[in-house]
Amino acid sequence: KFEMSGFQTILREGVVLPSGATIAVDVVMTVAWVKETVTVVGQSPMVDVASTKVGTTLTGDQLANIPTTRTYSALLLTMPSVTLSTTTAGAAPTFSVLGSAVVSNTYLMDGLDISDPYSNTPPLFLPNDMFQEVQVTTAAFSAEFGNVEGGVFNFITKSGSNRWSGDGSYYIQDKSIQSNNIDAQLRALGVQVGTATTRLSDLSGSIGGPLMKDRLWIF
Image 1 (tube, rainbow, N blue to C red):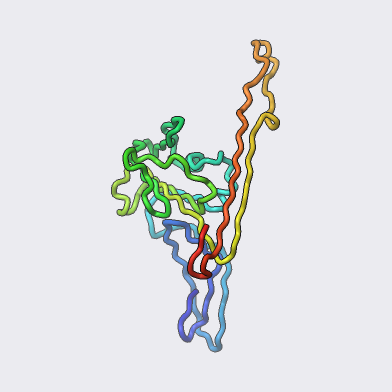
Image 2 (cartoon, rainbow, N blue to C red):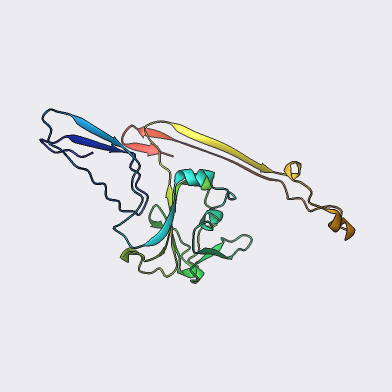
């Protein structure tokens, strides 16, 4: 909202500010002969001209629709310059950014460091449904990240509002929805039955709303 005595009040709607970004929104205010308000509806500019950092941000819509497995590691692997370094049963996966060592990364949640204090690796489990944005910075960090040589992974969590809302989902994979890819060539080699994937299911849900309107929310 832009307002000044003697000028038209201008409301700029539809402006979305991604985490870690600095975006300039310019308007031209004209002299108001009568009291009036001008509302401008439009998409916000997505080019951050105030920063030199290199990175990518996944928005809430992208997180909900991107075709990956339901793990935060799969989300990170959709980012440019990020590769999977190691994956071990019972341990968190590790990532390399632009070929850097896996211990050179920093993992944040809402700006707070959640890296393992011993190995500097990410947490073992983070539910996808809790993220509003996922931001990965791979180069040209600001001074606040002076101890980082790899990448900065920042998970922005959802928050409640003045209206109660929620969602739920159920994902399943079992033998009934898997096809058999055994062809004539494989049968000639003696392969008669394929290996089916073990039954996998994932039930999740979330809810958020106000505890004190305009003051305190939960999610």
